[in-house]
Image (cartoon, rainbow over all chains, first blue to last red):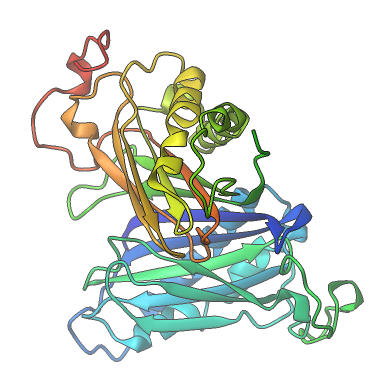
Length: 193
Length: 193
């Protein structure tokens, strides 16, 4: 496992929006790990080490989110993943962490997860904002669950670090009313509808 | 006095394993909780605002309790701080309303907490961040526990809102080695040493 410097977990609860009470409140959690980038400052062809780290972080950060929301894995409704690479790294390092192996263990933590895990990645510096996209975990077309959550740490990522974030919710947007497929109508078989 | 209308809460918990030095056996943790409420005095000069402090007490107690639970119980807490963000249609003085309900809520629930709760406040726009100062709960001069934690969220405080924050920590800075009064030498009677 690549060395972790820090883990942060944030939870947002929305109790009212546009003057309307939201009951129960909508809730989103994001867990972020700051890890050392083993390939900072050099071009390395084989990124297996980062892929394996991605697998461990998918489980660890997914579990942290579910715990922070105080829900069972089945109660998770949407998810997302993102990475921000410090300036001595390479965008491909974010891709290696996120795409090959992170999703499967994350899906175990949220029970099922038929849908693609939406993602974003970028290079960045300490204090920069990372926007983690959110989508329904079993049916990507559920329109009420398209959302995002911001995460930001004043001291990360340093030049030789990578921030890896996983977000999980137990709800969609507070006042969804733009139509489309609803959470209740989703079949959740093909990952889309 | 007016009702406390809660729009949103944001909690954040960090575990710090190392900062370039040896990995800590007991990683220090910092947690913050921020409540975003409507500012009942925004947009005008209201001479008499003191009664709102009383109305904020239940919110302060609820937030302090959640923060203690996040960090695993009152016996884990060694440092604390508090802060206010005031949306632009408000006044710095509105931020000062958090002093009694925020500070005394933490001190009441922590049992022995003799040190003054350090604080910061400012008027700002949406998305602003506040650095909340942190000191030891029983002796303000304990140098290892001087720290701070950033709070804020992307959609607050709106012009007519207040964001009130409480912060607690479970120990010293991760590689504390700058001397001064150490936690194990304090008397903890006068709140200073």
